[in-house]
Image 1 (cartoon, rainbow, N blue to C red):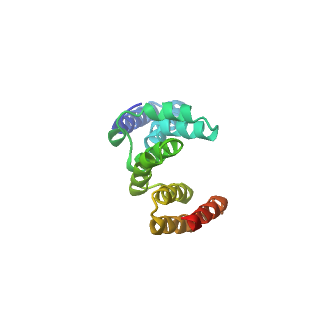
Image 2 (cartoon, rainbow, N blue to C red):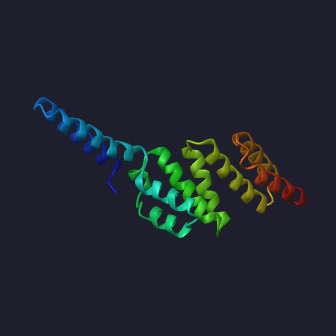
Image 3 (cartoon, one colour):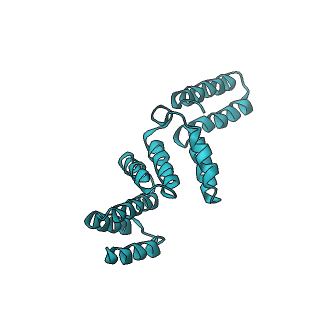
Length: 171
C-alpha cells in the first residue's frame, strides 16, 4: 500500500506524461495515460485494503476481512478521514463478534470520524445501543436506537430495532 500522498504524486506524474504524449502527437497514448492516472486517484479516496475487506464481509469471511485490515499498519497517515472512519467501523464489526466492550471504542471513533452512508452510521449506532444495553445504560441505548431508526431510511434494520426494543423492556 502506498502512502496517500504518494498516490497523488503518482497521479500527477502520469497526468504530466499524458500531456507530454499529447504534445508529441500521440493522442492515443495520452488518452490511455489520463485513464491510467484515474486509478491512483480513485485509490486515494477509496483505499484498496478497505475495499477488499468489504468484499470479504459480503462473503461472510470475517477472517479474510481481518487479514486485509491488518495490512493497514498506520491508518492515521495512510488513510484520509472518511477512510479512517470506515477502518474503525470495520474493526468494530470484527470485534462485535467476540468482544462488545472493545468494539464500542471503534464504533465511537468511526462515528466521530464520519461515515459516508446513513446505513453504515445506523449499524454503528445500533451496535453501540447493544453495548449500552449490556451495560444497563437504558437511556443511552434508547437514544441510540432512535437515532439508528431515523438513519435507516430503507427499513433494513427494522427487525433488529424491534428485537432491541423488546430486549430493552426486560432491563
